[in-house]
Length: 97
Image (tube, rainbow, N blue to C red):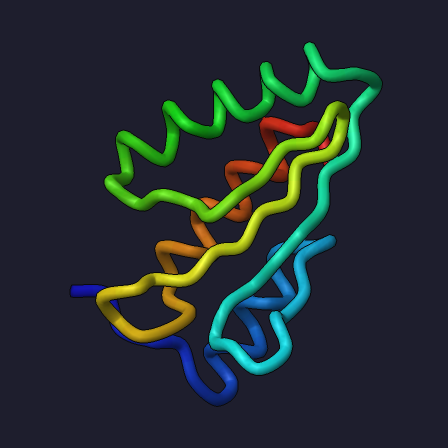
């Protein structure tokens, strides 16, 4: 099982994922991705889903037209872990952000 990030390790990890912020009242991170249109947003979600499946680590997300809102937290660890950071980095890369 992945271990929750705390202290300086957590701060450094959060600094490595630009555009992501902590979720108030919850041990999780979030980001909103905005694309040109629905096709681009759905393509992002498809590519991100393949990465998430390989990691066996699945995001909480919603899509409305060209906007994808993502929340990451490792539920079996009870909060933010390096799995979330790794998936956030991959999503940033997929989105070109």
